[in-house]
Length: 341
Figure 1 (cartoon, one colour):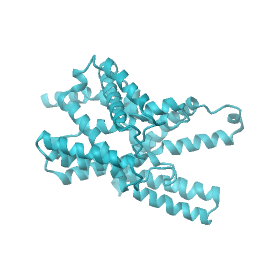
Figure 2 (cartoon, helix red, strand yellow):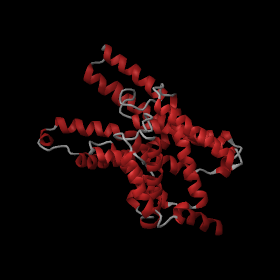
Figure 3 (cartoon, one colour):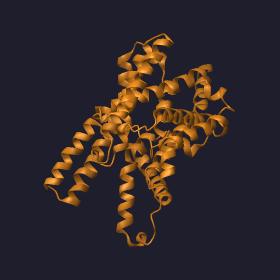
Figure 4 (cartoon, one colour):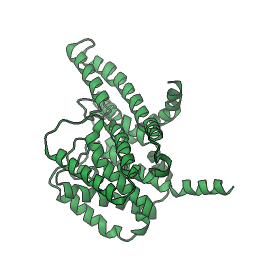
């Protein structure tokens, strides 16, 4: 009975994490609309680092310590299996069917696209050019790789060794952002920096920093905002290794992410709707671009919509509404698909 109560309390206490994930994924959807540039710059400055920080926060060291095979199996099931399913679905729907209808089945351009998209999905190159309307799933391979790197960092028992390895990852990330180097497979280059963000999340959970820094959030929010606005690029992109001023990028992403934790924990620890989105981040991430494509296509085809301007906030609302039935179908059929494989 006591263990059951403890489990229920633990579940209740972590509801705010689903709220944080929900806020993060809603910002992802908003960032994919035709939003104002200043909105994009703000969102891109921390929304992907936030998800790496959450991953570190939820990382169970005791579960995986000296159990590398268990880590690989667990994270493969969590990230790579949905990656494969989403990739296959988008390849069939967009690459094979839609591209075939648009440019002609069997045409040279059609064959080239099929090959290019296939290479992009295997390599996990997260751009519209290399992926068939599902490029945001680059994050799934990146977070998978980050978990592997993070495992080996925590295998070093001393804090000094861990910090030395993290510093090395920061240096490598900085160098890669400054040179025109080929994008690494499965976003290994993005995962280097992602691992650093994971460590921040791990420390937040271990020392309960979001609980101890209640009023500090009022100070670090304007500091984080200042760092973001001071970065001399249009937007940060972990996917494309575009960081601008590396120091401002780190400060902005870390400080704003910590603010989201503090804000949610104290002011919005529970919200069923946002929690629901937070529990369904993967299908939203995977099908958001495909939904955007259909929204824009419908808007151009149906005459009644042609008279209405597709503003970024209208696009955002339509995207959210259309993602709801997709999430329902994903939750209904994805477990069955996985069991049948």
